[in-house]
Amino acid sequence: MTPLSSQMNIRGECGRKRLFASSGLEAITGRIVGSIERILFTVLDEARAVTVEEYVFSLFPSFALQYCLRRKSVVSNEVSYLSHFKADDFEKVVIVGGGPTPFTALHWANIYPGPIVVLDKNGLAKIFSQKLVKRLGIKNIEILNLSGEDYQDYKNCIVSISLYAQNKEMIVRRVLENKEGNNLIFLRAFAHEEYNALGMEWEVIEQKSDFRTLVLGPNRSPAIK
Image (cartoon, rainbow, N blue to C red; front, side):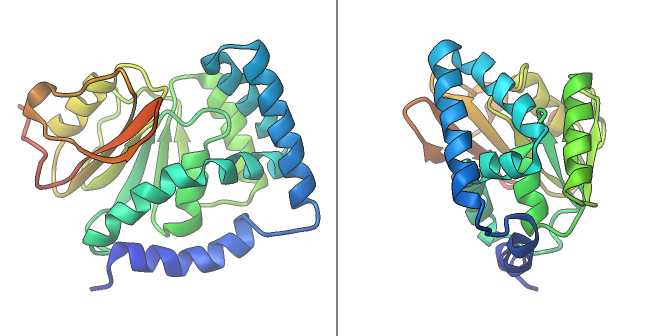
């Protein structure tokens, strides 16, 4: 059976031509996006700056794609981890905390042929992201106005919990309570956050000065009753 990462890379070569296609405007939009980010991060704290820029970029697909490309490495590390798994090991990807510009979902849609479910408890963010996904012509992303704690279908799936998601430990518990088949959890956490509860042994696959990406693979996920 073809490793999942290989299948995704093959899909990605086609997908990038469709979703992240190069054009003469790419350099210009990249500079504009960078300038907007620098201004926002100068006048606002990080959380507010991210929120504002995502709402602004969501209105303009070309800006949204540049925003996604600037955060490509975050998803790339998660995709690289999947080289250990087969194409039929998981039925879908569930992303907790999409935001108005769901860059993680857009990257997954570019390389993953199966269904992608985005959970966001903010109704306005759902509306903005749905409109962006529709403008980009992406068919395999479903966006639900639902918190990660309330979702009940974490069976046989890859779960990606965003850096700004709230109640992360409760979300992880909910995933493990609904555990059936394979589950693989990517958790993006600020440097000061610790996740040692529930007897879980996390593996660090990315370490930055301000955040890190943790993973809990199928062989490490305890059954929570």
